[in-house]
Image (cartoon, rainbow, N blue to C red; front, side, top):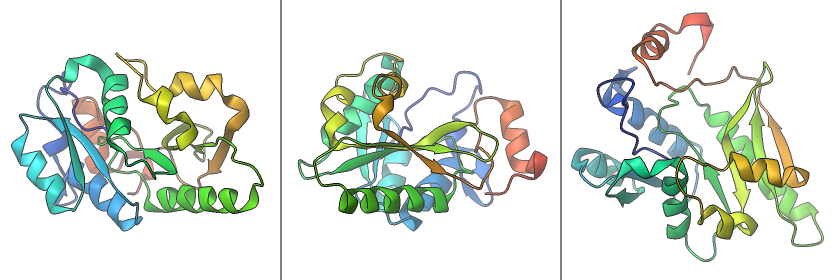
Length: 201
């Protein structure tokens, strides 16, 4: 889970803004735990001690970085390098999507398990979510075959490049939900707390 951005467009740390009785970041962590994801790693700034305590309270692992300006690719690579050797896959989540759905996380997890049981060879796998109106995005799962390349990411080049490069290994998880938008601006946040358009968490 990537949670070490600077919130420049918001002007305040957006992850601590309230959403349905808890901070945005806590809403996402709680959903990851509800989906029974094993080994939740949260990438945070090393100076955000309050967030470090929150992450640990939920039984998650904090991956602390000393600079958020190195980009989303560097953040993701740092988390991948912390995974245990026996990890079979990693699901990428964004901490500023509090309307992400537990059902989609659980569905991708089950889809990967079913695929692993069905295949006869050790094949690579990427599972990306496609939402009701056709948008594709997070949660996205990468099998361990891609860990070495994910661990080399730098700057603002995230995993999207790998998805395009290895499109032959991409499966879709078809979601019945609307896309859970990122909260990047004040307008985004106002839409979030008023559930404009009928979006529900």
